[in-house]
Every structure is written in structure tokens, then in C-alpha cells.
Length: 251
Length: 321
Image (cartoon, rainbow over all chains, first blue to last red; front, side, top):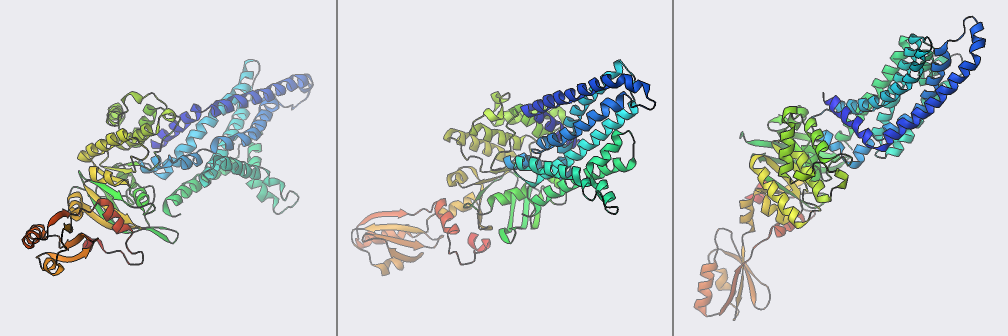
């Protein structure tokens, strides 16, 4: 209940600043651009594709590349949205309002997390509307579309949890943003390492936040991938709770 | 133990790394009391208040709020506390109404009582017409009031205010003080300050903390007694004979202030002013002046906090006795 109170306040606070509106507008515009290019390309090659057996469908040709691009953009956007979560509260001293209220540290962290997640899901919802609009004129593969949305949703959840954790480490929001971006990018490209090595390559591929997303985009729903994201989210949320508790205990 | 004890602090310690900020603090707050927390900068006032409000964990010791241990049941204990930190925890982007509503929600004020609670706390803090204003547009005095309104919105048993009158103009200070006095009727109030007259005008009990230790803990009446004279200033036309004065009942010692003034020290329960005056007149020394010397709170404060740095602080019992 308290989690919801804090999350709702967090979400509304986001929309009180122009940042949230600006991010929504810019991202929507860029994703729309990507979407239109994909539609254009598809129309260009549609006659050729029609002649092929086992040709990629509309969803493969348009939705998947769009979600793929969106994930890269979100890698840049989430740190900006998550940087203030705790850092700003600690800097302006408002965290003590939450700490002296009858609310546990877990509720504070989860409230903040879900507040941001709601915002990111609003963005995700607007993005999904674009490929959905194609349903007016053609037949969509809803399974694949859902898999892509789920993948991006989980990816956003993972980004947000990492961003939240980094935000507990510093009082400077900008430092939090840069560090979160660094961490996420690192997790993104970690699979580049040991690519030629038979022994270690699977480890790096498992760790990479991107590899799990790719398989969901292809429409293959693996429990491993979903579990990877859930574990990732839980780990960083627990880290955040521990970090905040540590501030209370000893300096 | 009395039922009316709202806050009970036992053997409280707090370390920052190896530096001990609060050591062996013991005190109680009863219902209807306004406890003034005095101390020089860095004495550990704010740390103590942060610990009481659950913002910091103590290194050792026990805190009971309304009989509930704040470490064992933090949520239940915190419902009984309203806390205003040194810097009011305000969200600048919100209006006063939005902010207070959020605070009430956080403190689990039931939805159907929320509007009444908000109205009451706004009224008490003089924010009646400020509901729609953005907090970022308020002056410092009004922000401070919103901070107090936030601390009392769920009418907690204990209200903890960390320097509530800092940065206010004299009229606002008076208003806030009368608000505190009013709060003290129904709640227990802990107030930290380094403005000494504030303590005298508002508090019912005074505690002085120095280097993390409690060096003084007494009611305001007790304080008044301490502030009473233990010395008389005597001026005569002719220099009195010291042997005669020292022989008077109650007089403990005597010192020369300048060539005309004498300071006569006496034991607190035996004021020799009357017999001293009679003696001076009888001997024809020409009495010019006989004044009881009052110790100000400031004097006590300075005495206690600048006491010999190397000597160990005297235990409270001895000081109060």
C-alpha cells in the first residue's frame, strides 16, 4: 500500500518537471522516425518478399528492428530518468521525510522503483501503439509482438533497477546518470569479450544484458532469459535496500 | 515506570567511525513536557534527534517511543513521531496541499480523516491561505511552517523539532513559539536550539548536551533555582572588615571586586542578605549597594560547556543535587 503511495507520488513528481514530458516527446519522435523508415523499407521489398517462401513477415521486418533500436535509445534515457530517484532526495534532505515516516526501507526502494517503472511502461505503451497500428491494414504476428514488448519491458525493468542502485551511491544526480550509463553499457558489450574463446564465451554471453533481449525479439520465449532479467532486477533492488540501510547504520 | 513517559532513552551511544558523537545518553520525555535540547555546535544534538526519529541507527542503547522499541518495531514506533529536521524536507515542485497530503498518506492518516487533518495542521501553522502555493515560491519562514505542519499532521505523541526558529523574523519566531507551547499541551515536544531565551520562554525542561554527554538535565524551576544568586554584591563607603562578614551565618567566602565592591558568596539555602545589611548599618560602614547576583542561563551554559577541557564531565546527579 505504502509502495503504491510512494510510487504514485514519484510518477506525478516526474510529470511535474518538464524533463519527463520532454523525454516522452523526443523518444516518441525518434521511434516514430525509425518506425516509418522500417515501414518504407518493407513496402519497397514487399514484392520481392512475396515471392519468397519463408520470408520475414511484417512483425519481423518492422516491429523487431524498431524494438531493437528502442533498446539502445533507452540505454541512454533510463539513466537520465533514474539519476534523481535517491540521489536528489539525499541531497535535498527529503529522504528523512520518508525515513521518519512509518515506512520500511524496502517500501521506499520499491516505491521509487515502481514509480519509475510506470513511467517507462507509459513510454513502452506508446511505442507499441505504432506496430499495433499496422493491424488496421495487415495481419500481425501477435505472439512475436508480445515477445518483443515483454523483452523490452524486462530490459527497462533491469535498466531501472541498476539506475536506482547507482542513484543510492551518490548525492550528485549527474554522477549517478553517468555511472548508470557506464554500468549498463558495460553489461551491454560484455559479450564482446572472449568471443573467440570456447570456454569463457558462454559466460560472457550469459552476463550480457543484450543477448537475452535478442532471443526474445526473435520470438523465442526462454525461461532462462526471463529469469536472467528477474534475477538482475531483484539483485539490484536488494543492493539498493542494503545501501540505504547502511547509511542509517554507520558512516 | 510512569504511564505518561513518551520517550525513554537509555545508554545511547553513537559512533561515526571511531569518533563518539553521543555517549551514554539517558533521558525521558513525559506527556505535556517541552524538552529543550541545548548545546554548542557539534555537541550531538542533531545526531540525537536523528536517532530518535529513526533516521540514524544508534550504535548502542535503547529508545522506547510510547513504550515501543524503535529498533524492534520501527513502523509502530514511527507512527508516534513527527520530525522536523534542521533542513525542512520539502518537495519544491509541490503545492502545500499536495505535499501535506503526501505526508499524511505516508504517516497512514486514514483517507476519510485526511482533509480534516490537513486543514487542522495548516490552521495551526498559519498556512490557511497557502494551500495552492508552490513550496518553491514560499519564503523561508513559510517553508519552516510547512515543515512543522508536516511534523504534526498525523498528531503524533512526540514532536521532534530541530532548530525550528532558525531564519525566521521576530514576529514569526513568536508565532512559532506559541505554536510550540500549544503543541506541548497535548504532545511531548523535543526542541533543539541554541537560542537561550527561547528555552526559557518555551521549555518546561532543559537539557544541555556537550561533547555527546548530558551535562545538565533539570526542569525550568530547577533551572531557576540554579540561576538564583549564590553571591551578593556589596558596596560600602568604608571598607568593611572581612573577618566580621565571614563570621555571618551562611557566608562561605568573600572576594574583592574593585576598591569599593565586594562579592560575598553564600550557601544556596542560607541567604545572609538581611543580617549582612544589619551588620553593615550597625557598624556604620555606609551601605551604598547590596545586590543579589543572578546567573543567566547563558552563564550556566557557558560554565558547563567551557568547563576544563581535560577534566571528565561531572555526572548529572552530582550537578543537579
